[in-house]
Image (cartoon, rainbow, N blue to C red; front, side, top):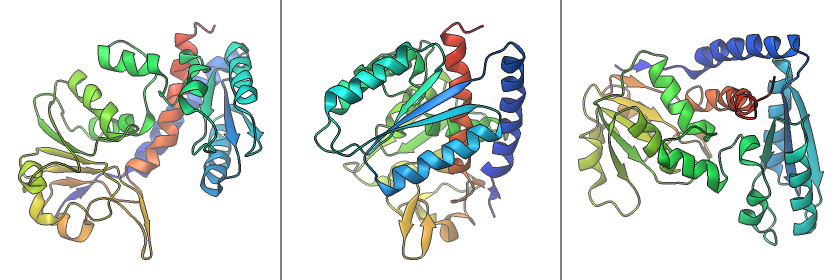
Length: 282
């Protein structure tokens, strides 16, 4: 039976570390501040924005939500992002998704300072990730690594199989894992015989967006399985891993909910603090 890798306890621990660092900044007269920019009223985006506010304020960070109507012009949103990017009072900026279809995502991200891009979506941060330089990188891939490292699971030298090549998890995970000296295989929707590849994994990380994709017969006995998927089904929230069939086979397994997803907000907080260092705040 797999040992469960809880994200909730770990999130509480990292949150306390963040709170202490925020206290040190405040002692210098600086309050870390994140601004989220929301265009339109997508229900999920609104909920996420509100959740961020509660979480950040709980550790003493400042938070502001800038809202535009769904009919906002490209130019006015770009102008606001540039204004926030140049403000010394703002240390991190998030552009909430999805955007209304008439807005150009790439142009908006280009208006965002890479030093304040706490989601790690700008071209400059993506380039830094690939080149091995320091920068701001997406929170969910960092959460996958944190849940391994903080539970004492070594990544270096291990064969890690990543299922999924999405922009926010799968793709950025590859260079992050290579930085940790893992041997990495990436599988996706066009992979032939997915089970063959997943059974080779010492560490299996799944971020495909397909509920129950990975079943027990696709997992090497004793493997570490990290489920970064989150899917809303009629039965409730579930991951990309079929928990009942994988739990008896895996050595370690993250639950959904309560696993990787529990860490994303605290990793975002850590990104905000890292952004302040990169900006040379003092």
